[in-house]
Length: 534
Image (cartoon, rainbow, N blue to C red):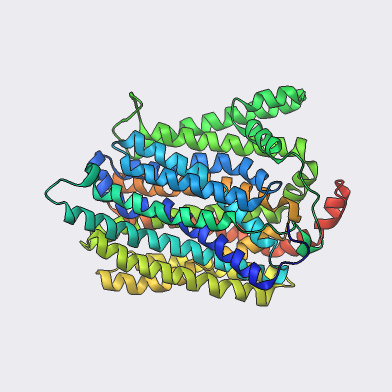
C-alpha cells in the first residue's frame, strides 16, 4: 500500500477506473431496457414480467450481496475485490446470450446482480481515499456522469447491435442460433474484462489517511463478510442469533417484524392481482403468479434490511449509533431510495415508450435517446457536484438546496415531456427534464458520506444500495409495467404515475435541510461516546 496522500495523477487515474467500473455496471444492467420489445416477443411475456427481470430479480441479489461485499470493501483490498466482481458480472452478462427462456434469463440477471453488488461500496470507498472532503462533490459528479454514460451507452450498444444482427441474419442461419438481443448481451459483456485487468493493477491507498483518521488493518475481512451474509439472510440469520445468545426481546422483535412483513407482502399481492391480473410464469417447472414473485422478493429484501440493522447493533454498536443515532443520514437514504423508484421506473420503460408511441426502430431509439440521455447525464452531475462543493463545502445544508431543486422540479417537467406530440418534441423537452433530474445524486451522496466515519463508508453505501435497490429498482420498473398492463399498454401514463412519489421526497429533504448541520456537528462526539477512539 502507498503511504500518506496519493499523488494527484494517481488519484485521477483511480477515479477514472472507478467511474469506468460504474459505467460498465450500468451498461450491463440497463441494456435490458432497449431489448425489452424483442425479449417480450421471443419469450411471450408482458411489461410486468419485464419489470421483474429489469428490476426485482436483479434487485434481490444485488441488495443481499452488497452487504457482505460492502463489509469486505471496508476490510480487504478494494482493487482486488472490484477486479474480481467486474469479471464475474461480465461473464454473467455474456451468459444471457444463451438464455432461451424466462428462467435462464432470470438466472443470468441475478448473477449480474451478485457481481455488481461490490461496485458502489468498494468503488466509492476507494475513490474517497484519493480525494479530500472539499473535492468529493466532484468525485460523486464524475461517478454519476459515468453512470449516465453507462445508461446511455447500453441503449446505443443494445439497439444498434441487436438490429444489425437481426438484419444480417434475417433469413436465419445466425451463428449459434443467436437472436439480435442475445448478441447484444455478448457485446455488452466485453468492456468489463478490460477494466477488470486495469483495476487489478491499481495500487491500494491507505484507508482514511487523507482524512487524518487512519483505520487499523482488518485481520479477518472474509470471516467478517461471511458473518454479515449469514446474519442478514432470512432463515440462516436465526443460527447467528442463536450463537450470539440473543435475548428474548431480540427474538420477539425479529419474529414480529417478519410477521408484519409477511402480512404486508400478502396484502400487496392481493392488491396487485386486483389492479393488473397476469398469467402465471413457469419457473423451474412450477407455475407461479408474477405478483407472488414480486412481493415475495420485496418482503425478503425488507427482512434483510431489518436483520442488517439488528445485527449491526449487536456486532458494531458504534456504527449503529452513528448511522441511526440522528435522522439526517437515514432520511438521505430514504429520499435517494424514493428517487430511485422514479428514476428506474422512467429509464426502464422510456425506450419502449419511444418505440411504441413514435414508431421508432431499436437502433434509432438507442442512438437518439442513448446519446441524449448519456450527454445530459454527464452535464447534470458535473454541474451539481462542483456547485454543491462551492456552496456547501463548509455548510452541508446548502447541498440540500441543490438536491431539492432537482428532485422537486423534475416531476413537473415530466408531465410536459411524456405528452409530447412527436419524437422531436419529446427529445427537446427531455433535454430540460434530464438536465434537472440528474443533478440530485452528487449532493445526496456527499451528504450521506459526511455523516459517518471513514471506516463506515462501505457499510453506508451498502445500506443505501440495499434500501434503494429493494424499494427503488425492485418496485419502480415493476409498478410502471403493472400500471401499463392494467391500462392496456399506456406506458406514458404509467411513467407519469410513478412521479407521485415526489411529494414525499420533498418533505424528507425539507426535514434534512433543518437537521443536517446539527447532526453532522454531533458525529465525532456520538462516535466517541459509543466507544470509537477518534
